[in-house]
Length: 166
Length: 294
Image (tube, rainbow over all chains, first blue to last red; front, side, top):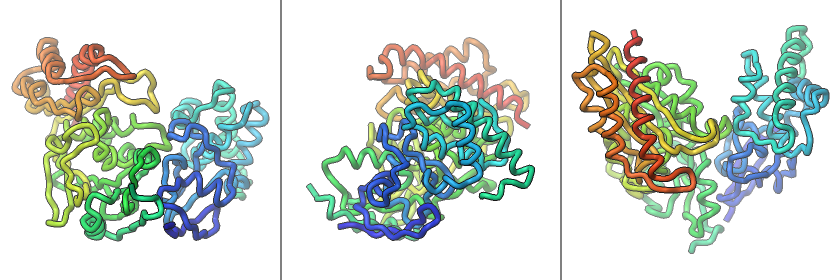
């Protein structure tokens, strides 16, 4: 038997039939084809599967699809056109903050959540925020600098009235 | 073994409805809130429950409410909500510190305090803080509601006094008297995403002279089959002024009370050596907070 759940995914209302033990990660990747969300550790330790649930980041690999019933999910695909993501893409490209890229979607979702907050960010804040994201290539420094740079750029753009892609 | 195909989802609108489901499916139901422990447990398990009861979004158990008697914390309050709460940070500091040590941001956004307690891991972070702060567990069942001293809640690893037809709905923490302070300290190799080698919570109240201890409770995590309230460690400080000798005595009594094991994270001997170190630091931190509290 499957259960029917209603949820919003990237702005669209979806009705999905899921096995009650199915993970949110499997629903997104296998049923909805949103493969930007990655599975790496599968145990909630690495953050590659990070998505936003009602605006806050969670690990989709340790969240049941059924628990997302009547809730709002945003994946890396849904965040692509946000002003924060544009600043982050520029920052990551300019700073060489991507190597193999497998951890990147999860880190970008975390970074969007951080940049959406009103508080100014610095390297220490980014480090604390990314404590649950593992990268085995970059050594983190370029990633952290790219996010700090993007945070400054996003704020400058908003201050200049250019942050219209909410 | 029940097949996956037989599982049903229940989305109760109230605690009473959730309890009805638990009673109807006695022993064959799983309560679901933040999912962080349960998802992994379900995937490892060869047995499946008949019904998943979703309580993570139940408004009745989602709030932190302060009143004259203290604070009521719903079981489905998340770790992030605990760390972000001004009243928890100010008056129940050990609990805010314990919640902040759990997982990383993503885990803290999902994991609930009720789940952390019901999972009954010996090394869980919030139980020592709740024990030191004098928490009562609030429980709903077929016969109505009951409240229970959290110190009697844990029976062993993954085992609690909760009956199969009962739901933990939240906690009640008494209002700390003036000149109170608390702290939670945890020993881990990594700051984030790690599990405690030793966890220690202390809650202290001082007399008007801001030196004499009038109340002290110490609780330990990860050094016994259950989170452990060590009354003997705190009681001997009452009526005394904190000094090297009284602190050392508290640490000695805590080390005597603990029953650690060897595991992948540390040896029992190392844990027993570290207990007094953390107990002394936790009490000293709690006392300095109490001394400066308005």
